[in-house]
Image (cartoon, rainbow, N blue to C red; front, side, top):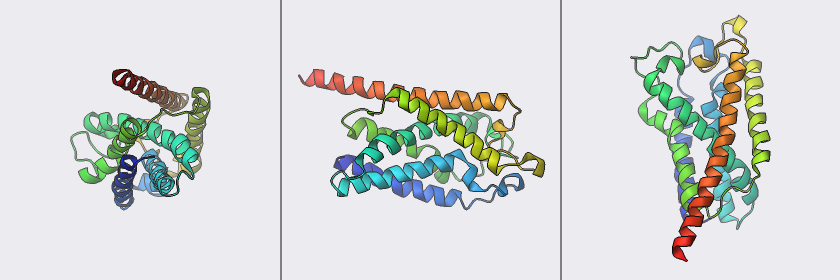
Amino acid sequence: MNTGSLLVNVLSLLTTSWGLYNAAEVKLPASLAQAGHKQFLTNISVGITILTNLTSIFTYFTNGKLEVFSREIAFPVALVLETIVALVYWPLRLFALHLIFHGVADDAHAPLKTSIDLSIHLLPVLYLLADYFAFTDKPFQMPRRNVWFIVMALGLLYNRYLKFLIDPSKGQAYPYPFLNIPEPFQSVVFTVVTTSGWGFYCFYKYVHHETKRGLKLKQA
């Protein structure tokens, strides 16, 4: 890990922590209040990004301690999750607000301030991409097969986690309106999203490898 990566992780830690703190102060509607802010995939992803930032900074100042966990486990998981969050959130945020926020019309203002919105829904993935492509010398080393199992397990765990937290018979709703659909359609959504997460990992690994290989050929 180099100085550029350190700087990116420090900036990410500051802005992402600030965004998460302020987002957690937003009052939720009654249908979401009981499960609280811990039900949102955005907040879970941001938490993993913060963990990545902290362990990366720790790795830098301890000459490589926790490097495998930080750079080969937490980092790729955070990048995949933040990519999913950004690519699902922003199209709905811009064109179908009612599918991402409860009780909000498409022509209304989003409940989050723009600065908070950007700090948890866009900046994390941009910081992670900058760290990966600009300051990381080699692509992720975890085999694609292992990542497929991890991503699928995380998707299943999040699905089970929501079902544990949320009881529709008590007036509770899923954190995102587009998830308030019957089975098997809900499971289909989770499967598509988790599979796309694995695809992003493969894509990032391939692009990083080809980019660095191209740079080496130019320098040769």
